[in-house]
Image 1 (cartoon, one colour):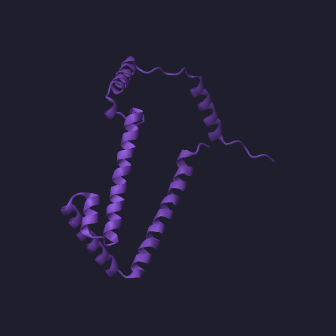
Image 2: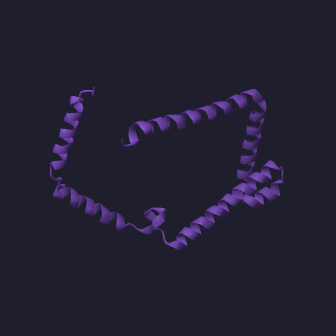
Image 3: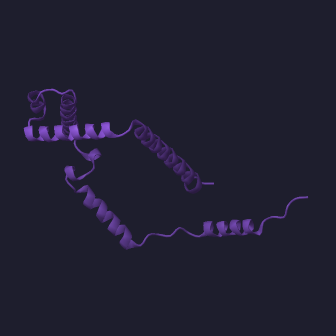
Length: 151
């Protein structure tokens, strides 16, 4: 014996067919005018006001080199501070003595706070962060399966 068809499925299929038979709606003329005006306005922006992908190749290369140099200075200064190098080496890397003293005092304070925290608390905090990240990934996967995947 075959089960009787669900009337909701018949209604769904009939509604789907009726909506498919309707002609597509055109956007109002004022909307297309506004969209084209906004596209023209964005195209007329100077290169430095556009996204990075629209920058000239020379400017992208210069930005990359300057960013790499800044990162290298930060890393060199941090390594010099944590190795306990004398102030002349670190100030040559950072070229500003008060900033070096401020960063050194912050690093000393951070090290003192880190040493005062029990190791079990640090391990627990790390485990909590890992568990929260795993929960975030799980919730994201469930939400994706529930809302984004077409059936």
